[in-house]
Image (cartoon, rainbow, N blue to C red):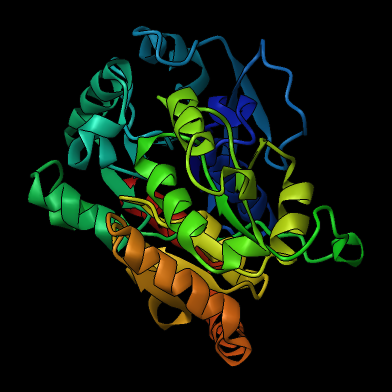
Amino acid sequence: MKKVAIDGRMLRYDHAGIGRYIWNLQAAIAQEQEASVDVQMLVDRRDRLNKEPALPIRRVIAPIRSGVEGVLLSPGIRAMDVVHFPDHGVPAGVKKPSVVTVHDVSFLSHPETHSLQSRQHYVQAIKSLRRAEQVIAVSAHVRTLLLDRRLADSERITVVPEAAGIRHDLPDREQLWPTPYAMTIGTIQPRKNIEIASRAFGESRFSSYGTLLVVGAIGYKGANIVRSVRASRNSDRVRFVGCVSDTVLHSLLSNAEFLLAASLDEGFGLPALEAMSLGVPVVASMAGALPELVSDAGLFVDPVEPESIKVAIDKVAEDAQLRGELRKRGLIRASSYTWSRTAQETMAVYEMAA
């Protein structure tokens, strides 16, 4: 049986996208009864994890993005047949066959929405895909962008979508915020388009009696975005909640009238999938992977046109029959995205790389 190591050093960021991806993937792989590969986790021995992974752990000392992590990882991966790097690239110095997951390439398609440091890191990381045996793209959108920019050959890229790590045993779907409200979820940074979405919300009829909750950490230019929103019309109807636990997030989301996902680009669109899996209607932008993910289970808007967003907000807020239809379609759509499927398809990629 082939031995595979998943680079789990990003687990320290268990509320961030890649950290959550690693956590859910390893948990799903551990539950596969007929796994064709022996999978272990690489974890930095200095990290104190909030939860213990389900897979066996191999402790290493290799600081993330240190420039020498490939060399420092060597003792931990010496006995491995394949190493899975979930953060866009293969560290320099790694000699083992590798699999890389690419979640997002907005640093190439929308470079202005990233800091210079972030762009430089990810541009260098993505160039290393040439050294990977196999590449996992989380959506067809990401795969297309990689091919368009000739960053990897088509036969080495497999689309393996993510899934929603939703708890459906929420305590009576506890109401944590006065209803009605809508939500937008994600790091507060330019790519999430929060300024235009908030402006559109403030112009909507729904804002006269409802609230928009913005859930997520402050990211690149986030403080400027918050100040801009607070200076706009009906700014008291837009509330910045900050980071919350998954349990609180899913409790809030389960009681929302709808999710507003008006991003300029998304590599996958996990908040939209989480909303659909909870039966919450989605208003999504015609950008990135969102049309691919949401399909006929949402209303679509032009993310740079506030009027388009405003019209969709009022349409879904005021039409109970439409909300019911979107809930039904969303649940059906979300049911095809499971972590079991992701685990099985990921292990098939490991076999191709070995």
